[in-house]
Structures are given as structure tokens and as C-alpha cells.
Length: 350
Ligand code: SF4
Ligand code: SF4
Image 1 (tube, helix red, strand yellow):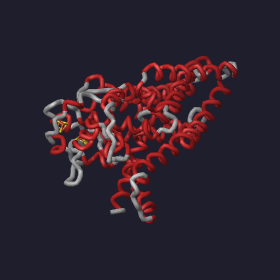
Image 2 (image 1 turned 180 degrees about the horizontal axis):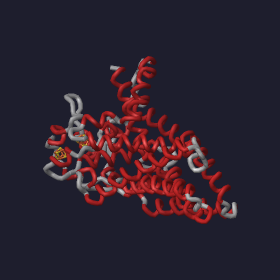
Image 3 (image 1 turned 90 degrees about the horizontal axis):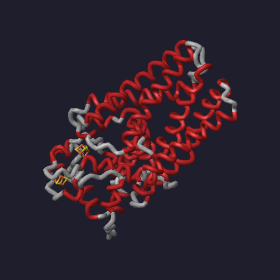
Image 4 (image 1 turned 120 degrees about the vertical axis):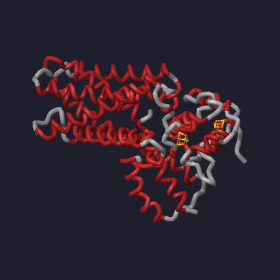
């Protein structure tokens, strides 16, 4: 029998839930949601579990990751209980549950902790610059090495253990018996979901939003590849230089559109913005823009006299790599892809 946590709705409010106690279980949200099936009253079941304080049930569920926040359920809810935003809140809450360090929960629920984290990273980067006497070449070399070590460190120390914890909560703890062949067969689907997030197309009228997301994911991965493996800031190769310009521009143009939509609150999904939503889009925008301008300054021989610009870029990059990627909204991209994989394992076990 599941235990009831009477404080659960209060806990969810700290993660961004809005008005969930208003739900009177009418089922309109389930009727409009394209993910709802006969066996799964989606998203109403998650709402009931949340309101009743069944946190262990939610902890072992993959459902919050299946929702792509089209917002139709929130639009049709007669009580303005915002089921779409609740699903988003549950994704934040689950991110904090999977994270073994506890930092994700802290950064999601405490703005002072978030600000301190961002300031500490900025001070550390300026400190490194000071020890290098603000020499352009040494700092750029450091920046390049930092990217490599940050990627390896964050993946091996934070993200991989957290995915194993997610696997424990959602598959092992549930005692789901999966044939070995299903683990192998599902890998292709995992990769496909990771790069395309194709299930977002199951939501009606979502093709343009899906396309924007797709371009940002591809642009982001290419920018990472170009700066880390092709050493964009130091290369003389014309193809690599232009590739970096194009993917940098893709990132800042499309993320600017996301920022505008959050400011205007033009869509259901942008009506409620948690600080982590703002940080994600703004930092991604700043990263693309600052990388683009740094490369222009390199190409026009202005970087030596404007090393501060590279510093600004490096600070944004370090804050992104050390705080947003391992503990913030970036992880949703990874957990969602693994949720699709684990869901497939679950289906194969039946
Ligand atoms: S969230 Fe709204 S639409 Fe869904 S069951 Fe509750 S009251 Fe009805
Ligand atoms: S936001 Fe869309 S996909 Fe998510 S629960 Fe609501 S209707 Fe379903």
C-alpha cells in the first residue's frame, strides 16, 4: 500500500506547481490529451496522485516524461488547475529525486542558492584568469580544456549515476522483468528519441515547435562538437569557422524566439515560467551569441585588446556546463529520452 505524504502539494509548489488543489477530477484533461489510453488516464492520474500525496507512486512513474507540454489539457481545464504545468513541475521534482548530489533540488527551489552558485562559478573563472595574468592564449587554451573536462566530468560523475538511479526507481524497484534482447533492441529507439524527440509530433499543431526544438538540439550539439573537437576559436579552417557561425546563429536566433514567447506568454506552455525555464533559454541564447561575437573578434584581430569578451563567454559557458547541464532543465532532454527507452522495456516485459 502506498504511503501518503500530506506535505507533497506544498513541496510541489516550491517546484512550480500552480493551483493543483483546484482539480475536481472531471477528466476533461484526459479527454483531450493525445497520450491518454484506456489503461492510462493521462494526465489526470498524475494529478490525483499529486493531490493525494502519493509521492512514491510518482517517483516510480515515467509518465511525466512522456508529456511534451502542448498545453491542451490546461486550456480545457474548467478549474484552471494547470495540469500541463503540473506535468512540468513533476519533471523538475523527478530531476531532483534522481540527482544523487541533492544540488538539483536545492537549485530548483532556492533562488538565493542559485544566485550564489552562479556567482561562485564566475569568481572561479576570474580567479583562473588572474593566475594566468589574463594572457589571451593561455586563457583560450584553458577554456578549450575546461570544455573537455567539464563534459567528461559532468557525464561520468553526475549524469550517468543519475540515469542509473532513474533506472532503479522506474524499472528495478518496480520489479519489471525485461528480456535481455529488449535492452539491445531498444538502443536504436533511445538514440532516435534523443536526437529527434519525435514523440512531440504526436501532439496536435506542434510541428513548428518540434522543428524549432529539433534545430536547437542539432545546433547545440554541433556547436559543442565545433568548439570542443574542432577547436573553433583557434582553427584557421574556413569550413569549420563558417560551421561555427551558422550553428551559433541558429542557437541565438531560435532561443530568442523562445524568450519572446515567454515574455509575451503567447502560448499555454509559456504562461508560467519557473526560474529554471528562464535560465535555460537565456543562458543558451547568451552562449550562442557570445560564442558568435568572440569568433568575429578573433577574425577581426580585436580579441587581444578585448579579452574581457572571451571571459564573459567563458563565464556563461562554465555556469551552463557546471550548473544548468547537470542540475537544471538541460537534464530533461536526457531523462526524457531514457524514459522512452525504459517505457519500451516496460512494454516488452508484458
Ligand atoms: S485537472 Fe482540470 S480538467 Fe483535469 S481532472 Fe482536474 S479539473 Fe478536470
Ligand atoms: S500538456 Fe499536452 S501532452 Fe502533456 S498532459 Fe497536457 S495534453 Fe497531454
